[in-house]
Image 1 (cartoon, rainbow, N blue to C red):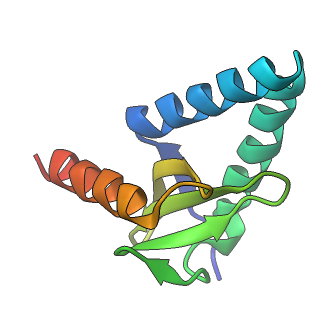
Image 2: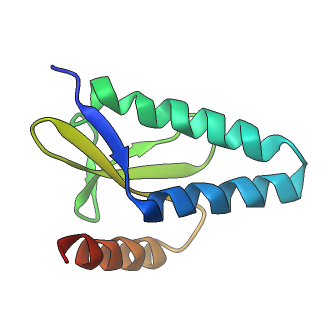
Length: 107
């Protein structure tokens, strides 16, 4: 399997910022640990993109240290992270968010 380029949609960056703010609200400093950990997971897509099961129309990789899922699109040379979502929410909310982002990325 060849390495791919990994990029993030602006909406995925906003998801990460929301997660950072949530964890910093729990205990200052944990938000930065959250970001570091999830960015490490995202960078691993360079070598693992395409091996993950598909959920709601996107390959989904689970973060290693936090209850978050990384949804991405894959083509021949790149993986584009569409969303980084908290798995503790109603699956209908996840489906709705991903559906909305699909419409936006098609525009």
